Image (tube, helix red, strand yellow):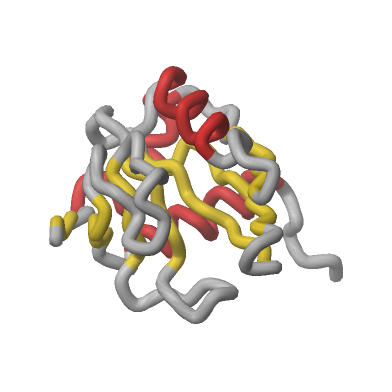
Length: 140
């Protein structure tokens, strides 16, 4: 039997990952990157506590201004300076915030990002994501 590789299964797995982790915001909107002072975060940025990404840290997250929508997209990035790739979750973001994140990851010649949108209606997303009502956010 072939495992379920549908988009629905992909988003459900991400919802489960989010549901089992606390969202930690360690770089609030307007803060400066610790090593690159010209880089200012246009939205809250952080990670999911208790998860692991390719760089050894937690799974990266952009957190928008909407409430209880859940994961609306992921952005896959290539960083030519660090010579790595990463996937970052966009949580509770509206259309303008999604566009801002995509621009942020493409404004430099050294970093590029491609966006994968979740096409479910926000109301359906919120109902299907167990993480939405119980998510805790820690701001550092």
